[in-house]
Image 1 (cartoon, rainbow, N blue to C red):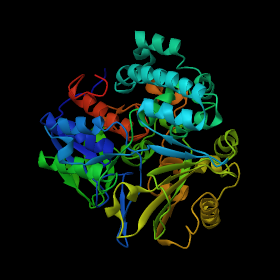
Image 2: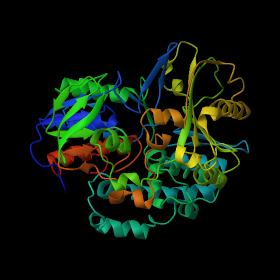
Image 3: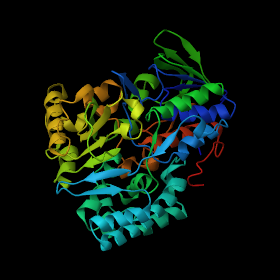
Image 4: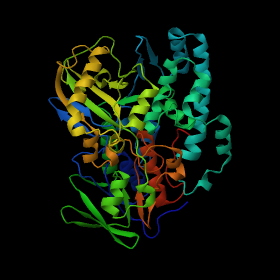
Length: 503
């Protein structure tokens, strides 16, 4: 495995996102002098915080899986997860609501989930689900230890006995046909394959190995931190500072000073020069190369980005019967949705939406008697949107009206008039925050952008990258792993704490 060369005592981490904090904790635990520079006034990066009118909104991820990965980062400095973050299981993990009026609760307990499927659909489908759980569980065991939680420098690193087992298992077939091998009802097929959108692909294009995402939430379980998902970076940052990490907010890094391919310092917008033996970069990968390193390699220039999303945050007077934390509102359309977003660059004509109601799990996030709703609608990224002439500077207002009308027609009457506080984020806003092609989901996980084919996490002699754009990929669990992999590039192989989740 390639590692940085030269001294590694003084380390500057640019960005206090989850990847940067994961790396910082492991490096501090190994006795390095770590300084984290963050342009915002709070930690978290994409897992940010918006406080307005007594509401506390998460501005990024709303789904937390594999909390052992958070525990591992804290373990590196001898801290316990429960001393920094209080987690509550989310049950059901999701409620899937379909256009025909039926609904299916997704439960992390396979026996309870099988009973739910039998109640809604029938015993044959429940038996197929139980076989599917065996498939995704084996996928998880093979992938996480041997392919995801591991630095990969070349395709040759994939040549292990586990690769052959993955192939025999069917991991390199397309996801949708593989799911259909076990699940015959369109409702279960959708709820166990929609996660491919997080990987930037249609389930008809994604490899079956990405069924592992379904394992993470629908088998391993979904959790919610008291205080919102932003409580995770707050906890990690607090533990890092306790163990000697210098964490500076409102500090914008404008570039890396280097001699050839070796970084020697970073420079800030205030004109400060901060010497470093190693620099760890947590900004969006293309932005890190373009604005900080000063050169963009071919592997990054050729990146195909994932679809984007519009996110509507609403503080509301409205409360609806039988509320759950996460609801997926499926429209009639399915394969058409992916064609519109990915191929045509158009917004969904019959949208499927994720509605998160975090005050179900933590009422303190809103004033008494009030609720928070976060509505996520997948959309084309800005590159794909050029194919249809999609202009968010003009589309934002009518699309908001379209979203609200859809919600009101699908079980949320009076949603619009009950809004007291609101923020809507479009692909243009994501771009303004420094995200390539206006997407918070980074590079799509096509075969050519997976594993060793994904942009690497080591540049030059001593610049290391972390976050969703590099290995292993997108999502809170993968970003936390990316911090461990970044630390391993500095400390050497197996010098950082590997997750108990798959040891």
